Image 1 (cartoon, rainbow, N blue to C red):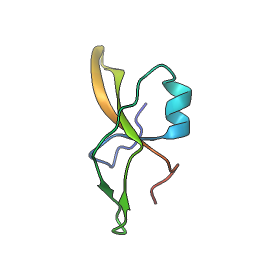
Image 2 (cartoon, rainbow, N blue to C red):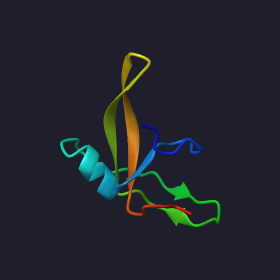
Image 3 (cartoon, one colour):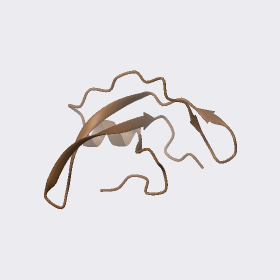
Image 4 (cartoon, rainbow, N blue to C red):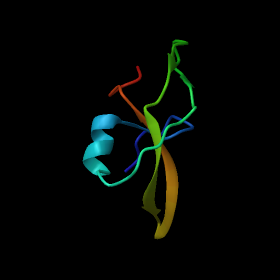
Length: 71
């Protein structure tokens, strides 16, 4: 599953994160995002999630945000 293919970072809303990754620990992050309208958004935290693509497994960072949509 791809969460946001137009973004340099992977983002997920908190409700999706809790449902799909209930056992994954979310840690604080200092990342500050800037939307296309110029507003800033501070993620709730960052988690490393295990993903598989073409048979290869990786642990990748996922920023967890409050909003369902950043638009």
